[in-house]
Every structure is written in C-alpha cells, then in structure tokens.
Image (cartoon, rainbow over all chains, first blue to last red; front, side, top):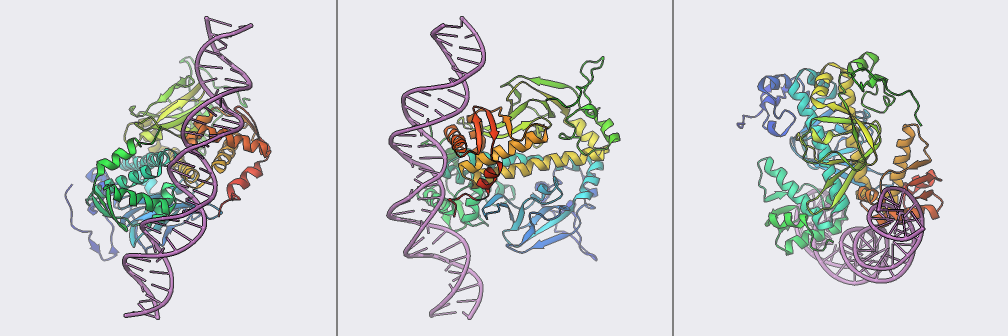
Length: 248
Length: 248
DNA sequence: TGTTGCCGTTGATCCAAGTCAACCACAAAT
DNA sequence: ATTTGTGGTTGACTTGGATCAACGGCAACA
C-alpha cells in the first residue's frame, strides 16, 4: 500500500518489476500475495514506448501479448469498410490492452496512443503458463476480462438508452472517477482526446459534444476550457443521468 | 431438428457429460483433446431448467457459476434506476452466460429465458481449479471471454455508428449466421424475442424496428410474418450495412 | 364463442441530433 | 510577427427516429 521508490535499473537496461511498480493497485497484479508477486516479475518481458498518434497494435495484427499501460493513455477503435470509426474505449495507466486478440489470435481493433506512452508487454503464452501455477494471477486475469465485459455493457446502456447530455455526463463522471483512482483530482483534469473522439465513443457528432459541453458550462455544472475540465457540480451531473426531465 | 442421440441417463439421474453432448463444437469444450474432454465431465455439476420469462440470475445475485445453454435461449439486460432497459445480448444453445459476475462476485445483469430452457451449471471455483491442470480448458475459456469482448465491440459499432435499417440488417445476418452454426437454416428462422427486445438491443423503439421490417419486406429483402423470418436477399442486407446510400 | 391481453403494424406529428457552414483559438512552422 | 493547420464553438436548417394514437391478429381461457 505504500508508495515505493522508482523502478530499479540493471545492467541489462530497464528491468521491469511489477513488485516495484507504483501502479500495482490498479493493474493486473492487484490482490496478489507477495510471494505470488515475486513470480510475476518473470512475466513482464519488455517495455515499449509508443509515440502520440501511433498504434500499439492494429486490427488484423497477430496477437502475441497483452499490454499494461505504464504511462500515458490510449484509445481503441474499430473501423468499418466505408471509413466509419467507432471508438470502443479510452484506457489509462494500469489498464490492460489487447484482450480482444485472444479469441482469434488476431487483434480485432486498433489501439492508438493519445499521448506519448509506455506499456509493459505481457507475452500471452507466458501469462497462460504462469497463471496455471499462480492462482492469484489466474483469478486476477479473469477479473480483468470480466470487468471489461461489464464496462462494455455500460457503454451499450449509454449508446442504446441515453440522450446526448446524459452520455456526456456519464463520460465525465467516469473519467473523474478513474482519475481519482490514480491519485489525481476528481474535480479537475485534462482530457487527452478530441471532441470527435469523444463523440465517436458516445455515438454523437463532435458538434453535439461541443454543444453539450457549452450547455453544462451555462448551467454551472462544469468549467470547460478546451480539453481542460473542471467539475463544479458532480451531483448535478449524476442527477442528469438518473432521470432526464424530458423523458417519458 | 436433433442431429444426435440424446444424452445418456445414469442411476444418479441426469448425468451430464460434455463428451457426449451434441453441442460440443459450439460450447466451452471446443478444441479440446479427448483426454482433456474426459476430465471436463467432472466439471459440469447439475443442469437447471428455466421457464420462459424466468431469470437464470439477476443483477446483484451472488456469482457462483457460469452457465452453458443446453436448450432454449436467453436475453441479458441491464436496468437503469429510472426503469430504462438495455438488452445487452441474446444467447442461444452452446453459448456461455454469467461471465459478467466474475469481476465483482456479483452478477451485473439479468439473464432471462426467452423460452423454456435448460442450462449446464459450471461452478466457477471448479472451473478455475480444473483449468489450472487442463490446458485446453484454460485456453478455451479465455477465448470465450475474449469473444464476448469482441462481440460487445461489434454492438458498440452498431449502436454508435449505424442507422436503424443497418442495425436491423446486421442483427438479422448475425442471427442467421448463428442459426447456421447450429445446423438450422440460414434463410428461415424463428425469432424468440419481441420487437421491443430487439429494439432495446439495437437502441431503437419498437415502432422503428417494425417499420424497418416492413421496409425490408417491401424491398424484397426478407419475408416477415410476426416472429418468423425468411431471408430472401442476404447480399442485399449485407450491402445495406457496407454503405448506406444517404451516408456522406 | 366471445373476451382479454399482448404483440405487431401503420399513420401523423414532433423534436433531438445531424448537417452544413462560418468563424475563432491556439500551437507549430516559417 | 505572420502564416498555416487543427481543433473547437456556434448558428441556421434538415431529418431520422421518437412519440402519440389507433387498430389488427392471434393465442389463452372462461
């Protein structure tokens, strides 16, 4: 639970060590015992740096590893033949990328860095192997996958049943909550994605996103300055989601 | 419509046996070796029958097992406090239910039988245990979870980026493909869900679903008689999805 | 053989979000 | 300091799907 010193260097260069990582509580190793944790350090191979706008992997790429975000953030998206894009998620530090690839051994979406980022590469074969002996790892890995499924259901709820402003409110509250979990302010944060990407994620056009932001600002719910967001009335946002005045 | 002999009975009553099940190719055991399969028979505890409209589990229920559908079909849905419902999926024979529960040990959605149905109960603790020794089971289970994630991304694409008729076309093609995989006709099938449930799944009102069906019938794409569907021009439906005339 | 209730269809109207277009802010490049 | 380009905002107008409402088909059941 304590904040630990930064990751040690070795002669071999940057030696990864989950047991030393300060993202422990957010990432795959969460909930594992110390002895289990020691074994985990064998698991994470290399780190990989990805520049802003560059792909970590693309749809169709061979699936070989999953990735834990060490620094930075990503979006995942799916493209239709005719060019339409659907952003399926935004990921931040400690979150796991690449789970979509297990089913067919090919990645089914693109993972693009929203800023200069770094990931821990977790070779999938090794993960399966190790999780056969390390019970805590197996269990935690299953939880991570399940959590992704539950999250996806939430997005379906958003897309299928909510109005534009409700969607944006839910999005902001979700971002706020995730920043909080990482030790940042719940009330003030910087979005890494454009209005268009938010719109794609929420099933809205960028103009609609922009207008909803303006509306929230008028109503004193949030302060908006480009990508810089300040949540002024979180309860107001929550109430917006529960029951829209116009509905029914 | 059965293709194989029914499952054997034993003195103990209904003894389940994956190795004898005719859904083998569709279900969790897919791709496992014969020796692996023998061990799997320990895994599946009991069967459970669920009457039409009854829940297999509800959001908030303690998570103890996942379920393989042996006969019948289900919907899963999420409810908002204000009563709004989002159907997150329709499941048919061989498909796995309950994966949402792993993450929090509580189920996060409702699973409701669309007709009188029967499931195989797979106690989750046992599954983790066994999948630590049976490699094929471990791998297959991961694939099932990953496939669910990929499927969810497809639904997000639907909800976020497609128009009403595209959504319904995609839905019909998906149903057709799944019926085919189960040895039924690709061109003619019976939907188990109402227009309202289809609408909830697709993010549309039931009237819109009904109108889209009528439109497809006018255009000679499908024959519709209540829940009975006949696909007359599958390519036409596919083309509808690729590029909508009005778009861009 | 009604009667009841659910499910589906269809029409008329409305409105939230999309489209089109102009303009502004700001950062990077020259 | 000026240009260029990307991202964001705002306004005017259009439209796809929602809403409201009436009605029809069919199965379950008295």
